[in-house]
Structures are given as C-alpha cells and as structure tokens.
Length: 425
Image (tube, rainbow, N blue to C red; front, side, top):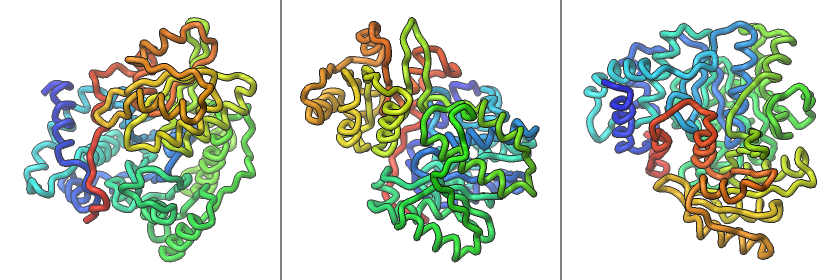
C-alpha cells in the first residue's frame, strides 16, 4: 500500500457519512486493543477557539518536557496535520501502516453500521499516540461532543471554549441545544473549564456539571495575559490563553508545569490559519478561517484593534452551508475592496452570490468575482494589506500557495462529509 492508496481508502470511508454515536468508535477501539486506556487526555469542545486552545495547551506541556499528542480537525492542507506528536506531523509511512493494520478490523461491522472516516481516524490516532508513548494527548472534538467519536475517552479535564451558532442542522437551532451537545463531554468527577458567557449556555453547562459531580471553573474576560506574552494575534486569544492557564492550574497535581513553562509555551505557540500574518513580496497578508458569524466578528474586532485605521483588501470564499450572508454583512463595512472566490469544495457557495451579498451589505464597496484564489491574489498584488478569510478550505489553499504547509496531494477533500441530522445511536 502506498500513501496515496491509504488516502484513497480514507476517501472511500466518506461513503458512510457522519452518523453520530459512540457505539462504533467504542467497538473499533476495543478491536484495536483499547489504546485509550494507556493515555491521558485533555478533551476540548466548543464552537470557536478549540484549535487555538489545544495548541496553547500542547505548547505549554511540551515546554514542560512532556511528550504530547495533538489531535485536531479539520486539516488545512495535509491530512497528516490532524495527528501530531510534539508538533511533528505523523509520517506518511505511519499512516500507511496504521491503515493497513486497522483495515481488517472493519470486517466485524455490518455495512449498515460501518465506522465513518472520522471514527476510523479517531481510533487510528489513539493507536498511534499509545504506540508513541505520549505522556498526554490534547484531544479536540470533531463536531459537537456528546455523540462525537472523540467522546469515548475519559479525560483528566474537559474544556468547553465557547458556544455560538454553527452546524445548527446537526447540533440544534438554539444556543441551549448546542450547549447540550458540547456539554456531553463532561464526565463524572472530571473537572470542567469553560469561557462560555451567555446565561442560557452557562445554565446548561452548570446543570450537566452538577449532575456529573464535575467541578466547574468559569473563566471570565478579566485577562491575565498581556499582548507581549502571547504569540497569537487577537484579543480573543487572550480568553483562550486564560482558559488554558486555568486548565494547567487545575491539573497541577497530576501534571506539574511551572510559571516559566506557561510563559514560554504561550510565547512560542503556533496555530496556522487563524489571524496568521505573513509577509510576501512587500505585502502583509492576514490569513484567518472566520467560517461562522462569531469568527467573522472576532476578525472584525482584530481589524479594529490590531490594525486600526487600515482598510484591507478582502479575499473571501465560503461553504454554502455556512451563514455566509451574515458573515458578509459583518465584514463588508470593514474593507476597502473585496474579491470573492468559489472554494474548491462540492459544498462551496458560488462566488457571484457571495459578491451579491457584499454589495447588498455595502453598496459603495468595490466587489470583484475571481476565478481562483491565485487570480484574486494577482489582482491585488499592489495592495499593502490583504485579508484572506472565510472557509478554512480557502485558508488552506493560501497556505499551500505560499508554501507554508506540509506537502499534500489534494487531501482537503477528506474534510468533506455528509451527515444525517441528529441521528445518534
């Protein structure tokens, strides 16, 4: 089997969609030898900020001398980004080996209850982290929490970053319903930390924590983090950092980390594609995966604070199942010019429709439809400040364009899946 064969096999698993529930992942993990039993986890859920918070926790504990596994999704360019040890992406030959070793386990499942791609990859990651003898795994949920395949582990701490509207067709159309799904990662007696602020959301988290006798810590916006202490841009990252620090404090007896480890970890953390500033041919180009309304508002706040007085040129693409008209309304007043592109996905929103949304939101805004990201970048090559945002697909394409990511062979399609709404086991 080659690496291309292994990736093609994972593509084939997309046939089984994303049927939420824990039974298949639990059975597959059992067939693989219960690798999760050999590992310690911090489980992170939430609407936005999961990846950044995971990256901060990973950086802190790696700085403290631990061997740290990191499991995140989606990937921006290479599938290998999803599974890392000490921030080294998993090797192609390891992907090949793990796929080959786990393929025979699938014969124990009937076709109508077959593991999905994400379930297969989740157990694959568990197996790899156990083999790598990780001291700790920072473990990000895929979608939701309660019925997400990652929820087969019992962590040292559960983290819920925040709750906002996203994936409403699967998680529910109210903040309370979404919070119920995210709070499903709360386990009996396991401490919970959250930065969620809305009263109706906190009520759900508090109730779930109480029912599970899980000590709850609520992190507010009284930041203890200064701009100079954090390598990631954006005021919202201070909330994520404060959240990470709260987790470290709570777990101090199980996993010691000194103040030096904390400061060095936060100062050196890296998380591509989220308010990531790059310099290219005399331009400043800001890459940010603001793929929902809350993310767009966070980007807007960063433009007003970190880049006050500078109106960028915007390059925007989105998926059709996102609330892109609202995202366009948030961003349209903040930019000098906009280029829209159709991202490389079957779920993409049409660039012409995106352009229409920008024009409706700000009739004075010059808006151009581009055939590709490369065309849009070429059209604004004389602009000093450019923002590429919207879908993480588009941000991944930009990272690939600027040669800032692990090489891949068209693997962004592995982020595609079609779920049956609310079909848990």
